[in-house]
Length: 479
Image 1 (cartoon, rainbow, N blue to C red):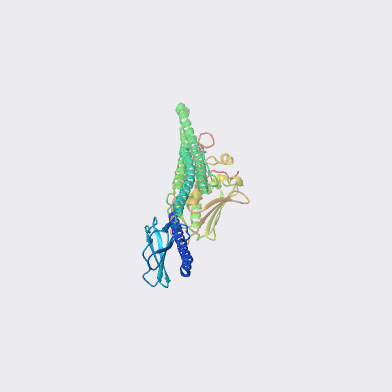
Image 2: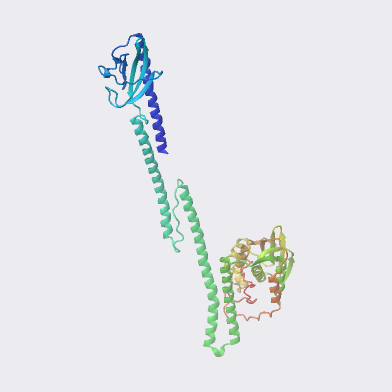
């Protein structure tokens, strides 16, 4: 760009200087021609700056000239060969002069014949003057140098900020997730946004890592408790084999193994959900699915049904059945006498509600109860058989189906509300319903003898150990 501007500047300057030289020649013509015609032409003409003038008579003799050409031969011999009075050539140099000059020849008609007027001015190059050339070359070079220096300064400043971010990120490890990258000033808006985005990412990573550590700690504790109870029971039995009630001890150990199996099964389920394992979806009547599951299960509480039919959702029936089972198990742990299950359509949404008549959950804990291994104090007092993962699994299943699972206000008890998008589809055979009906003919689970371990996390789930319909949401609604 600077080169183009410089060339245009030189062309403009050259044309301007050429016009100025042409104007000086025309001015000399205007001054000398009247003197020739009036007969008052002096032999020495006034000298102009860098300009030479000669007047030749009809015989080619010099009759007048500027001081630098006095006594010298004609500077040129050409003239116009046509009817025009003016001719122009560049001579290097003209006679009696130095350097290249532009010589203009004019015919001045007199009674004795045409006289010749020669006016020589320095030849103007296309770029004008040397000063203009220096300006045209120097200015772009200076501007380029300034722009380059400014660009280098800005880039160096930005790269310094980026390098600081890179160095800080390289030093952050799993034990230093609290560290953050430096944030640039307001003048470096893009770098500032980058640093803030990196820090936000580190914040999320720090929270996720803390949750993972807490989850690992809770899982280890929940797995260690039944293992410790089983080991203690077996060691006592081996120390005093004659005084041990072996059937009772075996039943207690089996109960601890059932709890271990439940925890491991729930951990595997969460791992699959976290890995976004593909769902086996099919159009399913939600009311029919819920009704079949309620008919299959045995209940300790009265179940009140309000199930609308022909509300179809596109779902994995086994996962939705698992979700419902977890909500029912949680409700039975904390209900007083009755559980209400309803299914209805709310526009484009299918809604499933499970409401118990227990003490309910304080609003402060409506989100906490969905955290993994979160078990409120009241839940530990009422029932230690859960794994603390049931409600977390239920919410993960709901979100995997593009739905929501929340707790909402109710006059009494805890009200869990599941919302899923409905789909327009004709009824299809529900394999979950067939599975549930087939399961209803199976023999009931054998009774479990309470374990001999101390009450708490080592207690087993008194409702058996079905891996996919197990209710293990042990978060209390009594908080």
